[in-house]
Image (cartoon, rainbow, N blue to C red; front, top):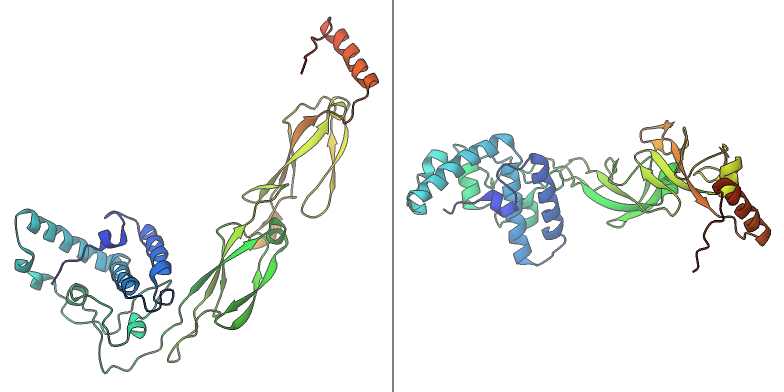
Length: 319
């Protein structure tokens, strides 16, 4: 029986947190799953190995047992011991677990995927007692969860929207709530793969990605916008019209407003996911610009002002 280094198989550190192990497995499973690689025996074997490693390392009790076995086995090797002479008997499971099930997304029974071919290695079956139990009637099995990536505009994320999805020939109208952001997971209960033998259907998870916006930048539930203010308005004060994701607003610019001043407009940001009545804020950053065009008379007036202010004529900069 060959020893299996599950950490090496998954490509994670021995002290990796469970979240890292889950993320790594899901990435590998999406790439090598038999549904994605029909007829590819190499991908099938890799998927079996990844799944086997994940079953052990994602379960605290099984991982503890495996870590103790791994440490003892490595110590045995360092002292020159041969694999065939290692005392596996002390680590063998007493009773097989016919109800054990593999995990993909949430849970998936690999025996259904591979038929009579065992999805488990001898090492796994002997140490953790998870071989296939023949003659046992299959019980209810929950359908597999599926993730579906969805791109949204910022406006759609602000108002909430719908997407018409097609999954295994079925059309699903998916409601997406207001306030979602990149990385949000929208759960559609029972909208994924059907269950078997009376088991419930799996869930469909929409993984949200918000597309860049040419006007607004988002930070959490707050929005940021650059506001162009001409120098006359900045000096004397005035009003400028600014966009929001609902309607344009009037922003009052007080006299003597400097460049890069930020105005906070409360409650005009993004709705809070789960509580759309709560809203973030809109932050308007002043960017000073010259009026276009400036007439010669206006330039001369500004030059005269500069002379009175500085006491001399500003040096002319030649292009």
